[in-house]
Amino acid sequence: MKDQVLCVDYFVTQVEDKPGSGAEMGKKLAKEGVNLLATLAFPTSPGKTQVDLVPENPDAFMKAARKLGLTATGPKTAFLIHGTDKAGALAELLDRLAQKNINVRATCGVGAGGSRYGAMLWVAPADVEAATRALGAQVATHHHV
Image 1 (tube, one colour):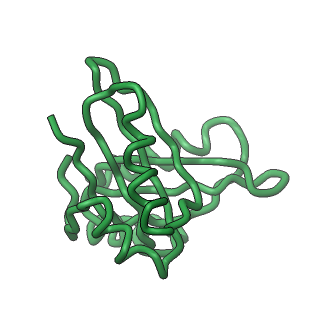
Image 2: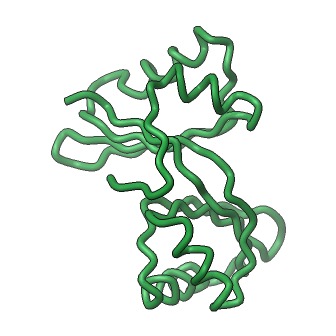
């Protein structure tokens, strides 16, 4: 099966860097019917964690965020990838970008079991259009994986 690459909207928020912060935010969003396709969290300063959220429905996410008083910036653009796991799967996609002189600013990949993998990657905003073409990415307002 061919890799599926989606050009997705993501939103950035900050939470306290303490046990349960992510769970609390996730439960509140779920209660509002928000399905997240991906999240990435990492510490940014003492006591603070940045959380990147890729909602299935960006409009529903923003509505829920406003209702919950969640400060989120975006939408920003990233690429959400899933496909058949094999040696070098992600390297092949990264090479397509390198061949077009597009720098990848960040990436995260994970084996998903059942010979599948998932990944996210980020490029500079000025490179999104060229990266979309190089990766053969699908662009959608609502992301269905």
